[in-house]
Length: 330
Image 1 (tube, one colour):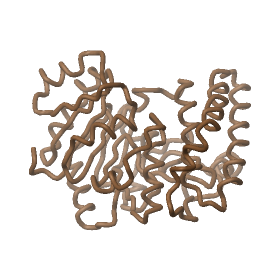
Image 2 (tube, rainbow, N blue to C red):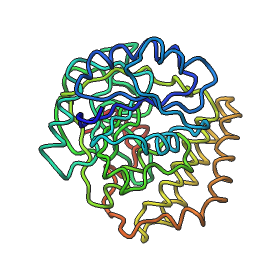
Image 3 (cartoon, helix red, strand yellow):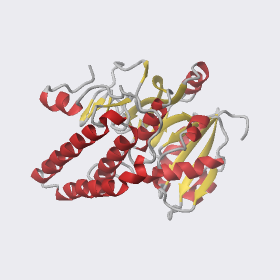
């Protein structure tokens, strides 16, 4: 397993049924890669399924459920290939999905991270929520994608058939050079899950690396297989981790003002949840804020030497979407 440049690494926790459903496409269309299962101490029969049904896959066993961030950090210490393909267990890949990625890495040495086109497994003509055609953030750290802004999902009719620089690549299917991953010390394990890939991408851009999207590689993502949008834990992780990401990566001259405004906007989001009767989600935002306050000093120490000034695509995606009624990226 030493002569191939790319490692497809699938993080798993109690996902035996997903593995049975989605691994066949990965095995069929990944001849140029070595395939690994990184298991977060599953208590179902995931390991047995791999050993019996997919014996060609190498198993890496973590000794706890470390979430996405620490789970990959631990597992990738055992992977030697030049390029990492971090793939969710609910991803279906397509023929020739890897060669455009490797070609881009080989052609442009400044590219650190690449995202393919991510479409919806359930409605295959639509983009998928988590990543779509490449991600950006606004001034206040709210993430959005080409092909998906908030709950507006676009149909794929070739409008994003291009190769462009983006701000963040989705962790659902995330390609990164091994040397860059370790230069950045991997994902921030404090995040556990959600937005750790945006934080990693922001840190990469601060070090003058490039992140790209390519339409030539296509995958289909189920989405919500671990935590769906109605789960208050997902709300908690997204709001807390977004604040931590801002604290770590905002330029110093914007740090206080942006975070203060973001806290106020989060408060408005909490009120909106109350008006909708989603009290557990409002509580999740409050909990996220208190956790953020308790983690401020530790995360200030994680700030890098350089923070770019022009990190955002638009000043306020909330204003553009809800006030100006712009449902797509211009």
